[in-house]
Image (cartoon, rainbow, N blue to C red; front, side):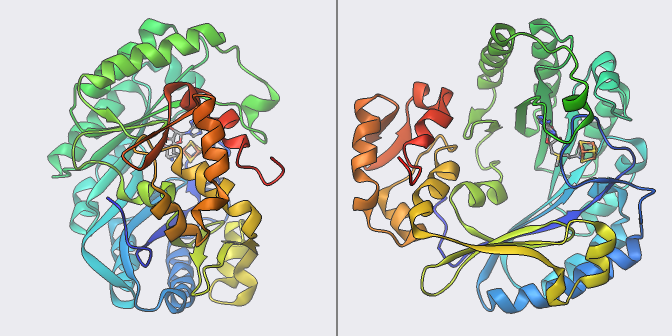
Length: 383
Ligand SMILES: C[S@@+](CC[C@H](N)C(=O)[O-])C[C@H]1O[C@@H](n2cnc3c(N)ncnc32)[C@H](O)[C@@H]1O
Ligand code: SF4
């Protein structure tokens, strides 16, 4: 799974949804706000023309079309942008192309066409199979549509499907959380993302917090669900579980601190130049502003160079999420820093039993993983 430092990924952001969910702080806007599918695809193509120059002949390993709700767009639109990507970038034969989909009927009916357009992995935002919880979450789909969407994705021929399920929902019991997981596992899709609901700033739930299960209950939900999931899938990241060969290549690239380019409103990119300097940049966030500026320098919302002192923390923030850990060689390859920069900190963390070393691989212990923020703090420049 170790990728060459010259490999990279592409993220494509689609910023609209039918309705804004009260817990969501992603860059997503209700469809009535400046929605224009054709103009947006044209903007993405102008944006791609500029990004293509930055990566030159490097090899593109994965594409992720996220949102928002990308499945709102037609298969023809997705096909149009993918054809441009194919023409302009140097793509590996086994490229992973994921599309995020919501389980509405309207979206599910397009799954076969998305597959034909070249999408080979679908990530479906199930969240829960419980109608009461779906309603509290402000979702526009119900349990029956959730089931139907998975069936339709499997019928459409997708061999790689991820289901997003959340836990720690308002008024949820441990038994209900386990039931959601059991239903998801029943489909044997090969990949599951299991997220604890968090109250994010700038959301309706943050302003008017619903009553959430207490910490003990949430801990029990997580550990009990993990036991169920372990019967079928292996955990490879804090929230991600997969069967063999089913891990998300795209997300693994992020977690291995790999490079990526981003097109679309608010999309982020991270690139390492020939001198080993790491730059982050992002596009204008508002869809209208993005569409008006795509392809011009004004489209950049901001950019910064990751200073050398922050590179260890940035690397660890990603790498320590992976159960497989990292080697010093990978650290040096990604950051171009000498291993001695982090060795004293690694020794401290091993002493504190927050990390372990085995066969040259450093990884968090269970305790280090459960208190990941504490573990990470040791790599802050101020530490
Ligand atoms: C980019 S989002 C949305 C994808 C898709 N539009 C949907 O809602 O189904 C990807 C996933 O993040 C998770 N998510 C979003 N907001 C969250 C929150 N506040 N707490 C925990 N998980 C969250 C959801 O499981 C969601 O499916
Ligand atoms: S559908 Fe997904 S992206 Fe859109 S508002 Fe809801 S959680 Fe956010």
